[in-house]
Length: 116
Image (cartoon, rainbow, N blue to C red; front, side, top):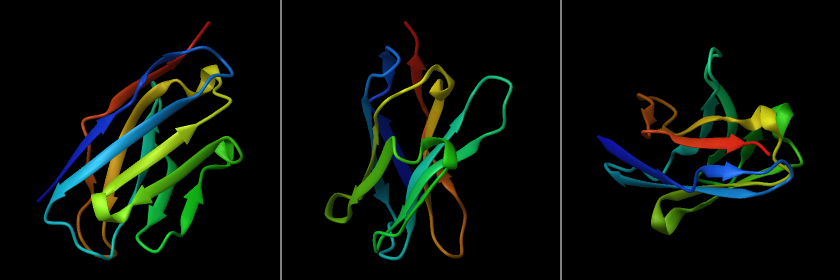
């Protein structure tokens, strides 16, 4: 089992920045990927950004150039730096951990609201 604990959500004005953090604990394997998904009201959960243990990243087109995903393997922690936030970024953000084979693990979610 893997446990994920997120932090860093909140209310921010358009154009502002937020940084999300997610710490993983439990049965962590060295080869894995961690990342962030989001779900807005009435919409499906979608990938925001993902990073492997070797540093390979994937981003949704809608966040490229504004969001940066990073990780600290020694701390089993993944970060999402969100800049130039827009109202359409408003959603619940979920941390994800997975391996090439095996189940997905999810955090409890943290709310991000972009509004003036």
